[in-house]
Length: 136
Image 1 (spheres, helix red, strand yellow):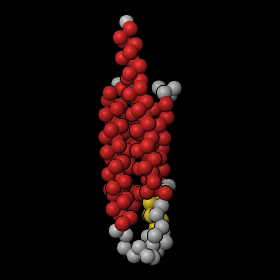
Image 2: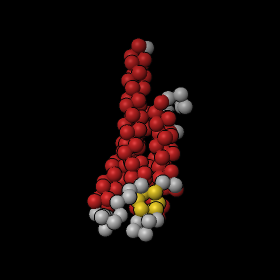
Image 3: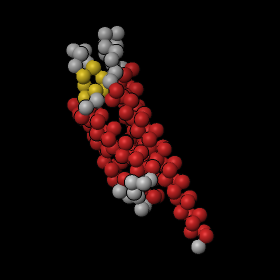
Image 4: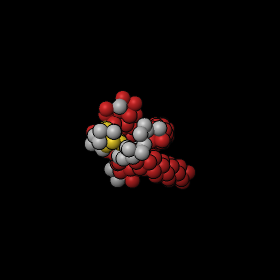
């Protein structure tokens, strides 16, 4: 399980999502206080879902097709988060006064890249298993 590169990718997605909930600020409000994802219910639920799905996918290493589907669902949640952040950053009130976006807005981008790399590695493993089955 640990020797596979997609395990590392999914572990990184899980850690990034948990860090986004508890430590990285998403944006700074008008009073210059950082807003964390755990203070906004939609973000808290979405980042938690990403972390739980990555964790669940990590332990389905024997079922590569299920792992692939779970990562696709995880990709959709991250795309939702990316869209939410784009919408929110374009519609921030007082944009001339408040233009500080936090590192938490970049987490879905990193997660999407890591999940695509994990899916690519899962497909490669599946092709390797199928070619080995052909030889038997």
